[in-house]
Length: 79
Image (spheres, rainbow, N blue to C red):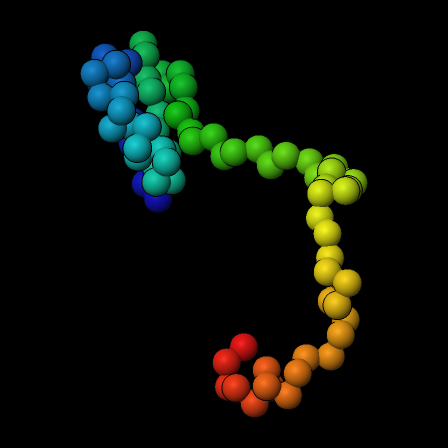
Protein backbone atom coordinates (compact mmCIF):
# COMPACT_ATOMS: atom_id res chain seq x y z
CA UNK A 1 0.00 0.00 0.00
CA UNK A 2 1.39 3.36 -0.99
CA UNK A 3 0.25 6.96 -0.88
CA UNK A 4 0.07 9.08 -3.99
CA UNK A 5 -0.50 12.83 -4.17
CA UNK A 6 -1.90 14.27 -7.40
CA UNK A 7 -3.18 17.64 -8.48
CA UNK A 8 -6.78 18.18 -9.44
CA UNK A 9 -5.79 18.47 -13.12
CA UNK A 10 -3.91 15.13 -12.94
CA UNK A 11 -6.90 13.51 -11.23
CA UNK A 12 -9.21 14.72 -14.01
CA UNK A 13 -7.02 13.28 -16.75
CA UNK A 14 -6.09 10.00 -14.99
CA UNK A 15 -9.22 9.17 -12.99
CA UNK A 16 -9.54 5.57 -14.23
CA UNK A 17 -5.93 4.78 -13.28
CA UNK A 18 -6.36 6.41 -9.87
CA UNK A 19 -9.52 4.38 -9.25
CA UNK A 20 -7.67 1.15 -10.04
CA UNK A 21 -4.91 2.16 -7.63
CA UNK A 22 -7.51 2.82 -4.92
CA UNK A 23 -9.07 -0.62 -5.54
CA UNK A 24 -5.62 -2.16 -5.03
CA UNK A 25 -5.42 -0.44 -1.64
CA UNK A 26 -3.29 2.61 -2.47
CA UNK A 27 -4.14 5.91 -0.83
CA UNK A 28 -4.81 8.66 -3.35
CA UNK A 29 -4.78 12.28 -2.20
CA UNK A 30 -6.04 15.01 -4.53
CA UNK A 31 -4.59 18.44 -3.91
CA UNK A 32 -5.97 21.80 -4.90
CA UNK A 33 -4.59 25.18 -3.90
CA UNK A 34 -1.44 23.65 -2.33
CA UNK A 35 -3.55 21.70 0.19
CA UNK A 36 -4.87 18.18 0.25
CA UNK A 37 -8.59 18.43 -0.37
CA UNK A 38 -9.78 14.87 -1.09
CA UNK A 39 -8.79 11.30 -0.28
CA UNK A 40 -9.90 8.78 -2.92
CA UNK A 41 -10.82 5.42 -1.38
CA UNK A 42 -12.50 2.29 -2.73
CA UNK A 43 -15.95 1.47 -1.40
CA UNK A 44 -16.53 -2.03 -0.07
CA UNK A 45 -19.88 -3.60 -0.91
CA UNK A 46 -22.44 -3.54 1.88
CA UNK A 47 -23.64 -6.97 2.98
CA UNK A 48 -27.36 -7.39 3.04
CA UNK A 49 -28.92 -8.34 6.35
CA UNK A 50 -30.19 -11.89 6.67
CA UNK A 51 -33.94 -12.29 6.89
CA UNK A 52 -35.28 -15.00 9.17
CA UNK A 53 -37.63 -17.28 7.26
CA UNK A 54 -36.69 -15.97 3.81
CA UNK A 55 -36.58 -19.53 2.37
CA UNK A 56 -39.56 -20.92 4.26
CA UNK A 57 -41.55 -23.20 1.97
CA UNK A 58 -38.88 -23.12 -0.76
CA UNK A 59 -36.64 -25.95 0.47
CA UNK A 60 -37.78 -29.55 0.69
CA UNK A 61 -36.06 -32.55 2.23
CA UNK A 62 -36.60 -36.07 0.96
CA UNK A 63 -38.48 -38.48 3.19
CA UNK A 64 -35.46 -40.85 3.29
CA UNK A 65 -33.00 -38.14 4.38
CA UNK A 66 -32.13 -39.90 7.65
CA UNK A 67 -32.23 -43.43 6.22
CA UNK A 68 -29.02 -45.44 6.57
CA UNK A 69 -26.76 -45.54 3.51
CA UNK A 70 -26.39 -48.87 1.74
CA UNK A 71 -23.30 -51.10 2.00
CA UNK A 72 -22.75 -50.45 -1.72
CA UNK A 73 -22.29 -46.77 -0.97
CA UNK A 74 -19.73 -47.39 1.78
CA UNK A 75 -17.77 -50.06 -0.13
CA UNK A 76 -17.64 -48.30 -3.51
CA UNK A 77 -14.82 -45.96 -2.47
CA UNK A 78 -16.60 -43.00 -4.04
CA UNK A 79 -18.74 -40.63 -2.04
